[in-house]
Amino acid sequence: MVRVKGVLEDSIAQELGIVPGTELLSVNGRELADFLDWEFLAADDELVVDARLPSGEHVLYEIERPEGEALGVELEPPTIRRCANRCEFCFIEGLPKGLRKSLYVRDDDYRLSFAYGNFATLSNLKDRDFARILEYRLSPLYVSVHATPWEARKVLLNNPRVPNIVDQLARLAAGGIQFHCQMVIVPGLNDGEVLAQSLSDLWSFGDAVLSVAVVPVGLTQFSHLYTGAPMDRGTASALLDAVDRWAQRALSERGTPWVFGSDELYLLAERALPSAEYYGGFPQIENGVGAVASLRLRVRGRLAMLPRLDGVRIGVVTGVSMAPLMPELLELLASATGATFDLLVAENSLFGPTTTTAGLLVGADIRRALHGRADLDLALIPAECINDNGLFLDDETFVSVREALPMPVYPSYDFADALSQETERLLSGAAA
Ligand code: SF4
Image (cartoon, rainbow, N blue to C red; front, side, top):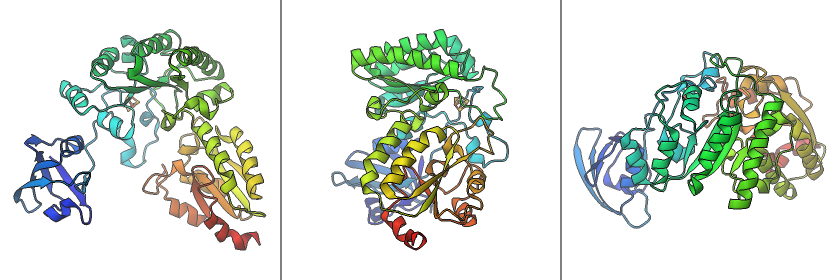
């Protein structure tokens, strides 16, 4: 059963009398277990939908849907499938106590992997899940592989019952499913030989493995389970060497680098990041692979569209890891707009100094970075550190942070989004 959360105005569902709270029980005789069943089974043009209204009334809707017209039903969010592992590098194990409950949910859900690109280990898949993935062709899936050698993977996931990922991928690949894989590297556990074996195994899947990201372990001062070695410059460099060897082979045999180091790996190794072209369609940009190259590309591509902001002073808040890359971008922005840009590097007060990503800065960090800066006409902060509900990770709202500061504050993904014509209008007084 799936429950209706909302019904679109003037939609088929509204016409039928489906209301929020209606339980959708089956479609064409097949029971609905979750949003995936609804999405795939209700894709037919001729439907018999068995439903129970909030009043308890049972209704059988016979629907002939005009081609391409949506039914107009929004479902309640699914119950997330929980993770059965206990990785020592788990980000959730590295969260401080006292944050909002939803942040502590350890999801490991192949449905969200397909629907939203969340990484899943597949370690909780049952036979019926394999059957659904194959029937609905849930492809590509985003898979946390970490290591293909079985014993190494059991250690990494801290779960002796974890299935053999090579067998799992083979079963799905035989049914036409493709994967984007990630390897979070814990020095001493899955670098060196384990990484070499893993990349070799993944390569042998041919087109089924679309891309592989090699990501350094990310720890906070609260990562109490972690026993591995720290990720230092030498280890990051050795990882990039391994990545490069496979990428060279992949480029010559398949025309794509196939395996990518994450941006953070390059920063740790103090190596220059590849250009945007290297990343092709940026298959793992959400995983921090090519995000900097993409930002550079977007900034350069939009310079000509930026407004003139002569005389305006703009503060740009970022995290420690992005700081060395920013001056080059800010110089471009300054010459395109005439504005002066002040780079403000914020340390992470919630997770500690080892957490340097701009997207994990919290409300208190933003306040501190911009406190008393009445000389700034405007401030830009990383949009990634605010969620869809306008909250930072420390539960501060963007609105309360903005109201506490002496200048207008804009969340920004690529500067150009905030430095719009509207900004120019808003600032015309300040610049005069
Ligand atoms: S698979 Fe590991 S890293 Fe992911 S949620 Fe589970 S314990 Fe955390």
